[in-house]
Length: 162
Image (cartoon, rainbow, N blue to C red; front, side, top):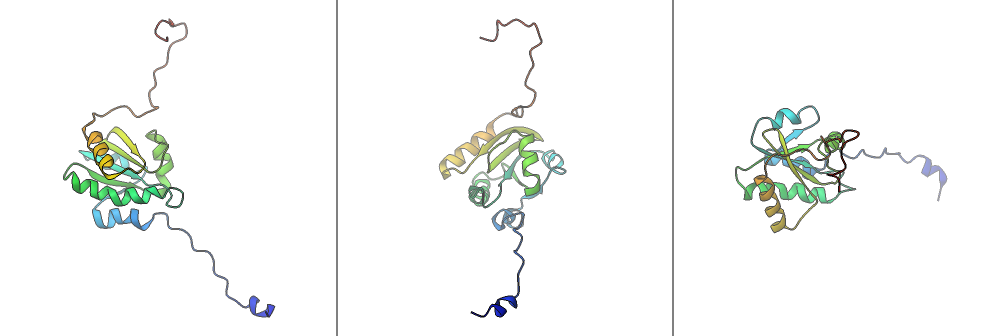
């Protein structure tokens, strides 16, 4: 092989991976989901009602996130009028996940009238996913995990510890 011909081949820069996969983008484009980020989530959630927010994660590291992105509109269709869908922008997922005590991808965050309800992580069989979504929508609002843990004052009695 002629080494000169190798030197004249055009070099192509690697293509940057998109921030959001086509399946996740499809939620907003085809199913009316709202894009939310650290600056817009609170205002979107405060519009009222039940809101389900998808944290899909990186499509390569967490391929289940793509499955959840496909199933989420089907859950919404099976529970008509029960919730609106939001999708967290990739660059904000880590910070928002920490804010809501989530450590797994993919995760669905359930909010009601701007308040935290619960999270549902991972991909599930259809029957399980539908049941767990119904259960989450029936739960009362609650405290975000890891936030507001009560502290015990120094010198307090140990009677309640054990």
